[in-house]
Length: 359
Image (tube, rainbow, N blue to C red):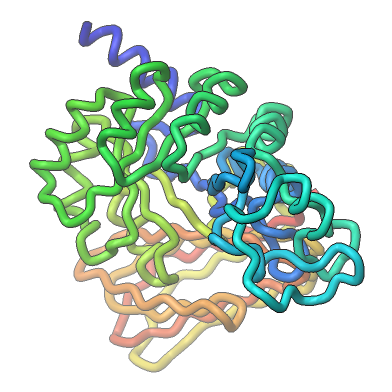
């Protein structure tokens, strides 16, 4: 029995791209690889964009329409992410997904985008799953609808991830699927979380936004037992910390760690090493501005640094001994720019940034 569970776990880890022996977590694109004002979240185009970036998984949210068709939408209403189909005007009155029939939603509204090419109708869950299968992208369903689990199993086999906060739903999914199941641990202790996961059966793990709870002391016992640990849409500095602390999956709006699978797309590299006194900084900017780009940063140091990426994301990281940080970001129409500033006297063993033009 133990041998069977181990084989199932290894197979599912291979499916979603996670390796129990790797210190580089799998990235899952939150609501697909959306791009602000261009590629809508929870869209078929977000799956295609994930495939272009080499991202192996996307998360999607499932809702019922008034006539019980499963569609992909995060909010209870469509107002934030959709527009009127006729004239692309803003939807003035609240429109709930659950109060419109599928035919009405498809006929009267389109997903919001500055580019008319991407103004498409709301997708069904079945369409999303078929697109994931076509592009070999693993879907992660954030859903409480057991029918959605059955549909995912029908289309994807065990090659999907199920995420929910209810242990009963997790056990229901496990009745007919050996997919990876991720639970929200709430505020439970790590010992209690392990007991819950053991009841569900591997492959499984946790997903949480509680960054104060998800530290090395919480992550390490779970990873030693081959449970998955996913950090979920953390504010910028905490996402980088979660990677440092050993999570196996990062659910993110912007992270990108696909160096090994996208080597042919690398266009430049920057290396630096030395000492920085408090207040000193180093910086580097790319000359090119790719339409679709990405960069990764690996930095080994002792001390305290502030890292600013493209003028919009700032991280403060501190090591009391020589240690490494890893992070990466996907970009759109952006000239990559890094600023690294010492907040204390700091020894930097190495800085390596790699830049990519995504085809």
